[in-house]
Length: 261
Image 1 (cartoon, rainbow, N blue to C red):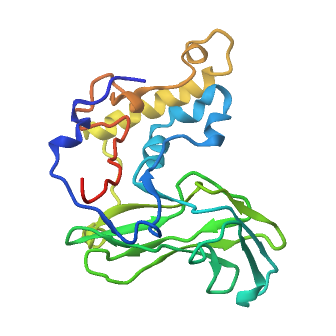
Image 2: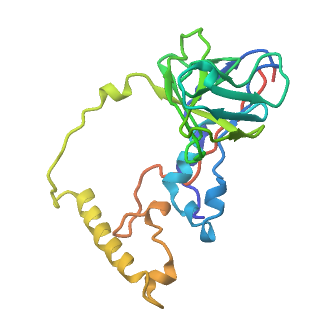
Image 3: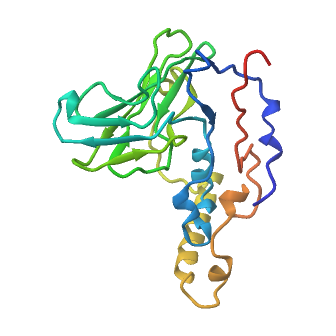
């Protein structure tokens, strides 16, 4: 793995508070998201980890862990009772329920999340962690003012298929987003102009990528020896220079700590 960018130091940026409020006996277990995925470990030579955007997305926030083992089967109907949910641990409150019907599994989160003014949270399933028979639903919540609780919801996609969640398995992932950012974006199309440096670099990359893919199957070729093109991972431009930006090769998110500390 290449050396970290000098801009990787999170201490250079002002801190933002992210607070989880709740009874310690009931509040969810939350931790920084992990880069590792079982399916990525199983790829030949773990090549999936060469995709830096995938790695950054995997670790881009905090994940909430399942409080106990859960088994779920859906009959395919819309009624609340058509989703059979079995929680393997006895708790004061059920940690997985059928609440909405239509094959939707709900994980109540017995806590209040608070963010700084102007920041929402985006919550969904753990990124790049597919689960057979069920799909995570996403939501954006105004957690800087809202006193309302919320839930993590998954929708079944296969009828009669048993879905199992292990205790400690990530059931949700979330990160902060500035409110109104998307509305401030001014998207447009432009025609290719090779007098622009970034487009010149893109053209160099397109050509090199084409050549690399063609040479990869050739025994003894430079492409076969290199195995993969490392330019983006290393923060290099296709022409060979450095990008000059705060390129990151990993994230270092802070864990939740007790408020008394």
